[in-house]
Image (cartoon, rainbow, N blue to C red):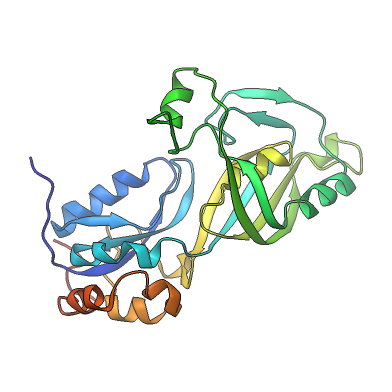
Length: 260
């Protein structure tokens, strides 16, 4: 069966991804509903939840406008162990005593602003022409490249975990809120703190928030014109005015094409 390539309906879908399915499964689910070509502006790991920005029909020509936007996340980090993937799906590499609150705050301070951290082994980055996560699944050890990014904000929401079983100043787990540049791996930040993400939720992509999102089976297609108007000029200008005009000529009003 061939993949649908229709240019309509046109629109932007804000989808709240659940934990479990891959981002590509969510893309395929929207494609089945609309029967149009469907793209995305950035994926989430299967264990992660939250906002996926999907583009339907001719709107896929505007992907560069939506890729590169800042992201906001909330994550829970277990500070007592690291894993091969930086998340709960990997094997434990090391277990250790939790840090003191002072040590954690010092580590967080070093992760704000411009940072350079290794890309997680369980990522889609290509190493020698092959996806890193495929090498990791086969047990192939590789030196992962460094990724430079910007951490605009990294704030503690709550100290969590079984603190009653720890010394009074120990922090076994922490919930963090992050505002980061595109391409930042939250799992790498968790690893740099000596832990791994146990949950990860994307709450915003640029001006779009998860509070306006819905499950893929219920997500409406938003007007491309309205979505573009919310982007900064430098994002809109990543595609030519002629391409934008061509997509807008096919634009689907809000509410149309949201189900098939």
